[in-house]
Length: 154
Image (cartoon, rainbow, N blue to C red):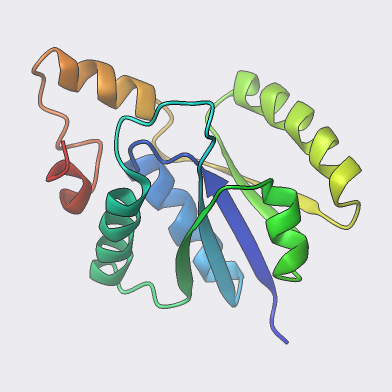
């Protein structure tokens, strides 16, 4: 069995920074699960199924063939265990991301002690889903920050 990893996130919306991380992970792992986390307590800006379709279209257009996009409503550490995946991919833009991710990693290790975190530094350090949503709300052009399939959702 090859090495697999999960890359979880809300991807609300999926940005070029996220795509950069998917690309890097797909070059190292045999299979990457892009897991769209759905938290019933949080209101999404974009429906998870439409984001999933846009991510699928994007990775297909990029020629990435070893990624599977799924929607998950539970704990990602449990999804990793269920899929027998011991690696969780996370993207980092700065030290604040690292500190946040280390806290989350500690909790996930309590749930799934076998889970190993692998951090990738994004080439798009200024891009975030929040930034895209804010710029878009002010009518600014965000086409340079999201893949075309995601732009069509906005």
